[in-house]
Amino acid sequence: MKSIILLALSLCSSLAMAGESCVYPSKRDDGSVAYFEDCGLVEGDGLELNGEHAENLAFDSNGMACVILAASDAFYLLQDGRSQRVLFFDNGCDYFREGLARGLVKDRMVFIDERLKTPLTPGFDLLLPYDYGHAVVCNGPFVEERHGEHTLLRGGQCGLMDKQGRIVVEAVHAIGDNEVFEHYLNHNNHCPAPPLRSEEAALCHAKRHVANMDHHSAQWKRQEISRQGAVWLVTFVEEGDGDEEFTLTLNADSAQWGSLIPESHDEARQRLKP
Image (cartoon, rainbow, N blue to C red; front, side, top):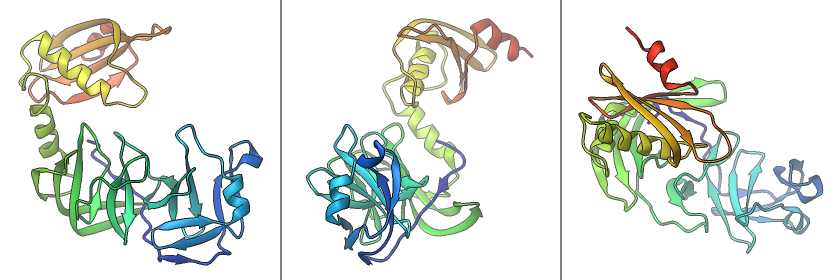
């Protein structure tokens, strides 16, 4: 779990005038995002594009496209015409993480899947993206701190929810109290519970962490592991054409990972030498 949570959030009105401008991936622009006028009509939590824009909308390989209205209303649209208002995040539609993104239904956050169905309606004020098969869920009140275009939220009462919608950590913790959530995740998985006393246990947790990272894989063609004090060092080369080494540091007491750096095992040992 990241210790700093940046959230760009816009909860807008349920009706937008047909003349409102928008941006979306455009066929006429080879799939690049372009700006247009007179885009369409928002009805409830759905968006109906005007005819020329519906024809011009470029869908991705999953048959999905993101449309942003001028008021920072964000919508996912499918090729079959279905649409769903979603969280406006990082200047676009909320990302899908572990198969789910955060949608908005009557100004309340829900989780939607890639067919725009709503498998989970947790009933909390704030939902964070799924991570390790769990999502932090929170109720207010929150304290907002502005950082440029983003809002940093503090306070609240947060817990942890699994993919079945069960609350596994009670929602009584502040939004930044990540050690509580990390402790649960590191003790409730397929690997031996910490403390990590063996190479096998450390390797299991290292692969679990790497498998959860974007742009990395837990399929390795070679690896090296050693312990230096309270830290396990796990160096690996991922399967594929490349031969780049990465070293993950892992706390032996908590099983929480610390860093992932492109370096050899010897370089990591030298860097961490007392």
